[in-house]
Every structure is written in C-alpha cells, then in structure tokens.
Amino acid sequence: MTSDLPNLPDMRIPAHVAVIMDGNGRWAKQRLRPRAFGHQAGVKSARRIVRAAHNSGVKMLTLFAFSQENWQRPPIEVSLLMGLFVRTLRRELGSLHRSAVRIRFIGDHGDFPNDLTALMQDAESLTRDNAGLQLIIAVGYGGHWDIAQAASSLCRDGLPITPQAIEARLAVADLPHPDLLIRTGGEKRLSNFLLWQLAYTELHLVDTLWPDFDEAAFAAALSWYASRDRRYGRVPEAS
Ligand code: FPP
Figure 1 (cartoon, rainbow, N blue to C red):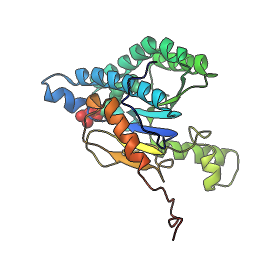
Figure 2 (tube, protein in one colour; figure 1 turned 120 degrees about the horizontal axis):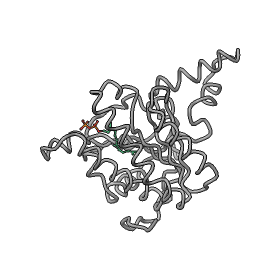
Figure 3 (tube, rainbow, N blue to C red; figure 1 turned 90 degrees about the vertical axis):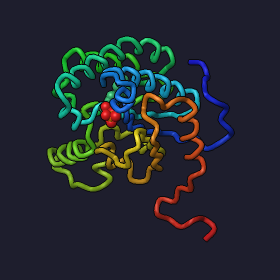
Figure 4 (cartoon, protein in one colour; figure 1 turned 60 degrees about the vertical axis):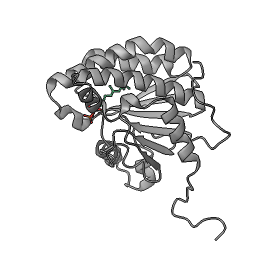
C-alpha cells in the first residue's frame, strides 16, 4: 500500500479506530441515483480508509458494515448488500493479505448466505497470522447481541457475571476498546454499535456522507483525536 495521506504531524495516533459508515443512501439520492449506487461508492470509501488507517499507523480498524437492525431493510437492498460484500471480499482479499492485514468478522452470522460465510471463514484463516493492520468487520452485529452472548456463555459455564467476565467473552475480547469512533452522515447516535466497548471512546461525529469521507477527512479525525484530553473519569494530572 502506498501512502496517499496528507502529511501527519508527529502526533498521538489512536491504536483502535471504529467507524459507523453512514450516508450511502443519501449520497445516492443527492445524485438522483438508486441506493445501490451509494453502497458501491461506500465500498470505495471503505477501501480508501482501510489504506489510510494502515498508512497512518492505526493498529486496529473496526467497520460497521451491517447491523442486526439492517435486516429490516427491504429484501432487495439486503440481498444487494450481501452480494456486494461477497464481490468486495473476493476482489480485495489478495491485496489485503499481501499488505499483511488480518481480517476478522464479528456478529451473528446465522442468517447469512452460505457463500458469504464461507468466504468470511476463508478470509479469517488466510490472514490469521498477519501482523499488520487488524481489520474487524462488524456484520450482522449488534451491541446488545454482543453483551447478551457474553452473558449467556458465562451462564452456560455456571460462572458469575462480572464486568471482567463479560469483557473476556465479547466478540473481540482480545483487542483493546476503540480509542476513536468516527460516525459519518450527521446522526448523533451509536446505533447499537460496540455499546460496551465504546464506554470511554472519543466520539468524532461528522456531517460528511460516507462516500465523501476521504483521506483528508480521516487525517482530520486523527488530528482531532490527538487534541483530546482522555481522563477516564479522573481529574487532570495537575489538579
Ligand atoms: C450506511 O448507509 C451503510 C450501510 C448500511 C452498510 C453498507 C456499507 C458499505 C457498502 C460500505 C462498505 C463496507 C465494507 C466493509 C465492504 P445508509 O444506507 O444507512 O445511508 P443513509 O443513512 O443515507 O440511508
């Protein structure tokens, strides 16, 4: 991957960035095009941001590609999105692997088409030992689902439900929580994304629609993050 980012000053880079990629439909509507056109542009934007994250030293990038609530969209849009995920994964897997990206999927994949789940498993096993950017793609994901599945697994094992025990059984239990959440598309909500893990994450909410979110916008988000004072409920050092 080549560097196509504006020069980043020597600044604090978030280890883990999570993104709610919102606004594909509105972007298409502004152009009098079908929603599918917006989702295709959304894939290009996701590709750009994966590369920008890799090039700027971010270690983990979690993208919210399909929520549990997205199942309620018209069946034609759901099947279009599933097809787009399959084609994108087939097309990008080789290049991501060559760039040492490790790919993981989180969510409830029970109702996913077989070709997609097979591809997701292939992508995970092919890239399992890669030491570069960790790319976590949340599909069929919901924060409530994640916390409930962690609690159920503790109940099954007859273990007490404590914050530490839940933490250890979340969908990506081995990764630190996101430092920075970027949400595009102007909404000011979490939409059931990583509810547990976002407790102390810095929230960067921008009006830019996802297909317009480019390397400069990503660099601006990193720069905003570098200016934040993260106190985790404590008082500032000097006080
Ligand atoms: C939000 O736009 C996007 C989605 C619901 C998911 C689709 C995401 C992509 C196609 C990006 C590609 C990602 C990967 C990892 C391949 P929206 O439909 O909610 O837009 P709207 O709010 O303007 O209607």
